[in-house]
Length: 196
Image (cartoon, rainbow, N blue to C red; front, side, top):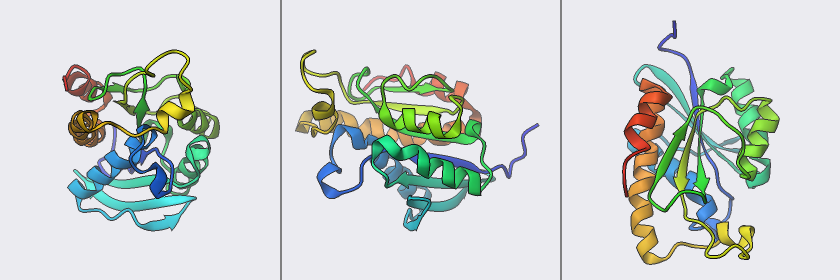
């Protein structure tokens, strides 16, 4: 039986620095900013190798975190905060970019492998678990197989892509809250099938 006062952590993945702000890899940061705005929560406390904020949502204590370690070390920040506040992996929601999904699409999962994503790889390694819910935000596939993956995820969106993305980021924020309040399965049912 879960208690209503159980703490949750929602993590948005990205790279710190203005040069990365609008890149494909920073969808997690951007979705977390939207979420913080919806909740009226400032993500401005510098600790745990990141920036975090604290609020409540439907009786739950909620922490919002942006790791500032760069993507491939994100797990360090996630582990530090979750260990400090005693939050198990099952109550850590991670929002991040996914190149296997079209721009504007979301995919909610309750667990799984890293799927080649360095941020998720780092979190799995640090937590010692794959069992944490995630909200994947589609950023589109590489234009061709020879295109360098790092160059692709660090590239910016076109104006038309940005329009589809904005709606997806807003829904990603809602999906994260839905996981907290109603569970991963309900969030998947509501948000996985939704179009652009």
